[in-house]
Image (cartoon, rainbow, N blue to C red; front, side, top):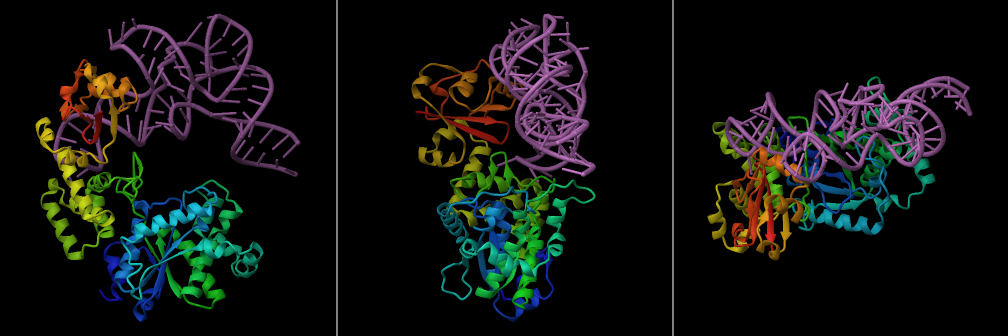
Length: 435
RNA sequence: GGGGGGAUUCCAGAGCGGCCAAAUGGGGCAGACUGUAAAUCUGUUGGCGUACGCCUUCGGAGGUUCGAAUCCUCCUCCCCCCA
């Protein structure tokens, strides 16, 4: 891939929303540095950050130099354009911890230490903001931008209330956000020759405040580029499940659950996602989409998508396990086949499946299924809920549908006299372990 | 400082003395159809009991009443308008 192909690349992938004139030319002239900001509010990123990460990935692949900016300072303020509330100050220790966690995850995508000229660099704006006094800031920075300019931004306008919306009001702190973020850009421009800031399309206003500052203060030319926010075809929020965020950290979201998330995307979404979230080239993606349409029930598109992302975010081994687990859990596995698998493999299959424990002693006697699932374990919140589910034929025990509320289970029902698979509906599985 | 409006079950939002565990919509869950999709349709959505039923809920604390989410008093919190 040559340097000039970056824009082309993200264009056909549908990752280009807005771009400032001259950006492409700048990228053709020289190896250019660009940055994207990430929130250090947790020690792990979730898939909401994946699109910007891929942007940096393509950027580096194109021979340019990516900067990762950890928003230690801005993260305390809260971006008014986002849904986020104003945040609390993170202490330096957790800030540091989160930064390390994020770097570790990003290392799977970006080269930080290869020795190449375009190695990625991580910076934290807390480092240069923490000692910047308020007075110095309003004198040196605030002076150059008018309130009129700041108020013209959509993110701000929205909060003041326009014809459709009611005024929400915003604090001075939030109002200042774009200036602080703009200053980051100026700082990186002056100290790291960083000429481009990228981000989600909601960041456009903040980014242009930065280029404006650079123009006025440093008399320089900087560029901006944004990527569309990832949406789902049905309009619901991307990246959320009933369990909450889908994290990149395998402790927070198991590789199996991660794989399942992507496997379950709709056709319409998967076509867009495979371009954004995988590195497969145009030709390969075209083929996959074509083949998928020939025989949609094979779900080749989702399987490819899930394989690529799981391998990239976790590992090939994790993918293999997740795949095998999915085949067993959703295939035609029976009590016999489940029993024939060796215990180690069996457990790896269930890694990531919610597990409940019960004492082996309690199993000596026969237990009513209702009691087992509500009183002995908390698989279900109430008996009423469970009864309802059983009436609707939604409960299965060891892959067998069960409607009889008088059903009793004992040791013999447990696989290897230890494990019981409980299914809720078609897709939700729980494991009960007796020990 | 003055005036007005509000707080209801996950959310929005009806109810305004008994028929209210509380309309309707959204969301959730399940079933059918399928492909562990999407769309659609159906059921369900406080707890306990198979069920007639019982228990806990309508911002908080008291009160009126045979009976209150609904009326009264005080308190807390939110919003709007005028100064």
